Length: 151
Figure 1 (cartoon, rainbow, N blue to C red):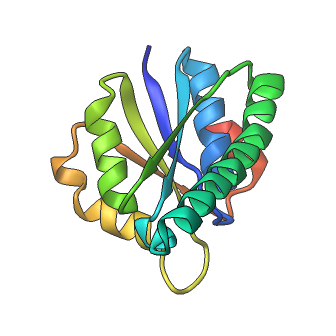
Figure 2: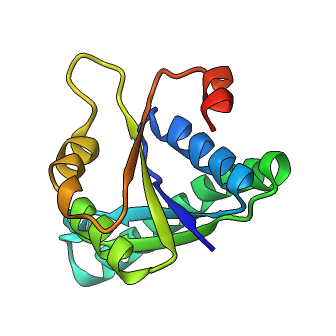
């Protein structure tokens, strides 16, 4: 089964990327894999404190994931997978793409502000020519109706 890989983070544009991935998967018989990356600099503390912070980060990610997963199951009939990795976000995304041969498309949300599309879109599109899969960039301010029409 072809999976759409979408990145879960705290950005506003993440919502449209999630919706696009779920709708596209539902319409094509695919699946959704949601990746969240915990940057390593969050845990540069004493060992015990770092372990507690790492566990709290995982709990926040899992709670955030459940919101999207419930919507995907209820509205799109898709049961997404959650993958949590630690490290540099771009490196971990690329590693996940290479580690899971079922991933067929990387879906990213682009910020709608004047500062640019966001760091992930900027960095990953620079590497797009050497990726083994296509990248779909979803505008952060795209309406739900427009998302439905293009999926």
